[in-house]
Image 1 (cartoon, rainbow, N blue to C red):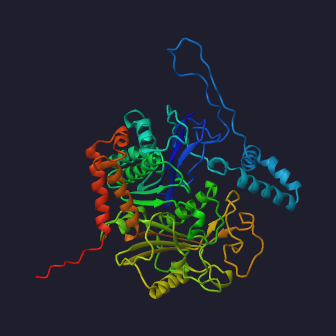
Image 2: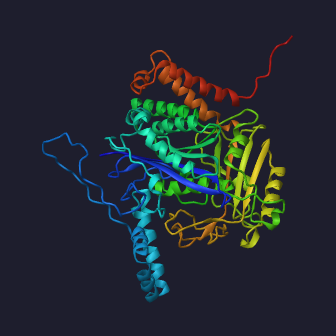
Image 3: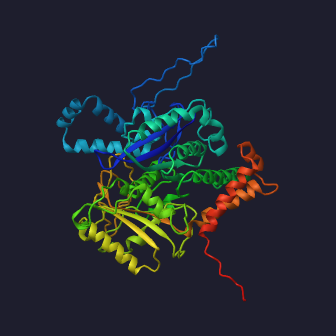
Length: 543
């Protein structure tokens, strides 16, 4: 079977007619016949029955062979198309015959319609296999690209070397570059490129090839990269050989990807369900349908200021404050002071009310990391933060104004034991909507509008879109020395398993196509990242 993958690149641009417009550009790698590894938030998705033209269930794949030099018998094997689930059936029927659906709905009472929605949410909760099972998006025909000839099962397409062998920019890159250029030419001005890359497998190599081309062609345009891994993507019970392969892959992937971006944000906890970020959530780590919703919500929130329209100083009278573009955030976090290019992503989902009984912890204390392998309780006087709060609630469930949110955050910083050197705050009144296909991951103490309810609730089943319509959100990017353990781990693994004399993974790296000179360059780059974050050593000179 052929292995597929996705690489998502939202292009944030300024349009002459619409102040901020977002173009979504995706590259599909492979043949739509088996499960892809998704280079976006949905880490283990599949095209399902999506065609290469960006639509669902409207194109029958051609079975005519392209090779005309073969004169012998040809055997064709075709798999059965995936059956649409209830959610996609309803979308399909609404699109095909909107009038008929309206007539059917008109003959049903309210309870029957609600029962249908319940069936849909239960179907998704128990039957999601691919990310297209809950996607409502229609993609532009030029936004999907199929990479043929990758004959590997998705679980085998799991390291940098396989990805490097499967993709050659000289052969396939020109067409991909043309597709990206098509969208770029539609822009009046590009804020920057946002990459969301699954770096746990072979597609990190494909992404680095694509990034290298973008950096060469679109100079001075910043690249913000989210390197995402799914919960449980690394197993504890494995051989030493497998552990060495995974450690080297992580080190090589991180080093290569970071060399082609201005800011990199590692995302993905080994167990999201056991993390502090899931305090008000009910997550099953085995369901990427669950974890992808949390990561997607966090990325939506932290990128919200890129889509804001700048306003005047009268923040109390407006719905947004603190608009900033990609270049501004990248420059803020990585272009000042230590010039640290690795940031931590934090989230509060849902964010607590500004005042009231449930306000046990401040907004700053409730934010918890989605970045793995970071230090806790580290005081960093040179930390820089970019925070977004939207849809925040005041006391008694009323929506807080922009001014109230800013005043509350300022007060929290004044009372905090540690505070960053600088923090940029963006605020919006609109909460995060919870659409029908959103997974049932909320605890029973979360109310209809995301308010945190007091008292003991005996019902243990989690809540979803039928119970909760929207939630307040807070997300934060931090440039801080707390990422040192992550960087030191990658540096140590690269040196121990790949570079030092008699290294266990030296032959493996050679099979991936890396020479000693390239490995030394990677080590030097990681060493510079580590050195930039180490506190300066006091001189012990007694002269």
